[in-house]
Image (cartoon, rainbow, N blue to C red; front, side):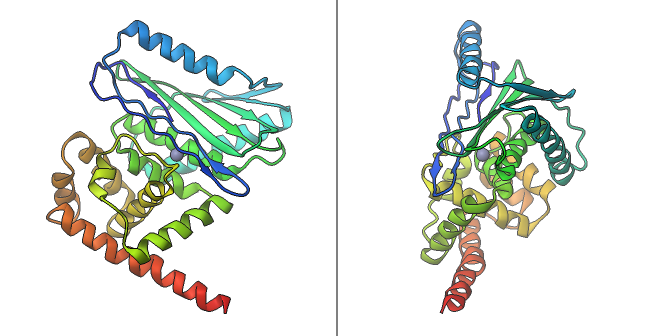
Length: 293
Ligand SMILES: [Zn+2]
């Protein structure tokens, strides 16, 4: 995921993720907040990104509506992905942004078949405080076997970016999108959350929330983001979670946690999270071990 923003902010960060697993792998994601580069350099960067996405795609068919343009190796695949993308955006927006009037931007989806790995990535472009477009790239081994979970994950990033632009913590962004993961990817993350919950080795939650850079090749950070979102959803609804994510990103996490949840500080939050996670994921692990015997 890339956000290009020409607001002139000083923050500049990169998120890279790739989780290699047996049948599939999770997106390479790059998140860039505002930089001090000149407009010219930003334009050049944008064009480079666009070109990088186009090179090698060699799409044979296009399916489009007023929101999506889907390029795929066959018309059948393009039509199917367009239909699924429309459904995913509609359902995710209804699920997460029921009271918000979100204005969507054009989303271009490239399907690359015959790929060695199956994964997705998205680039979310905003400039001059305006969202410009989203670009999603879905790699699959076969154009008749495109992973819907991967598409939904990337569409979730687009829905959140259309609503919050760059003003939502990366960990919250990722934790929300990952709820649409499926199959082997989901199993791998569940194994990691179980291990972290039992060993209580989550690491610093506030550092993760503050971070613009989540390296999810470190599965621990990705799994922690998912667990934090799940924990917060056990403490309140989706609207509260996203408000918390936006307020914390733009101000201070200690203030945000006091304002939105019942914790006085991050230490109290960390302890409650670890206790909750141990009960939720740890007990599940014990049950599955019993079932295996
Ligand atoms: Zn993601």
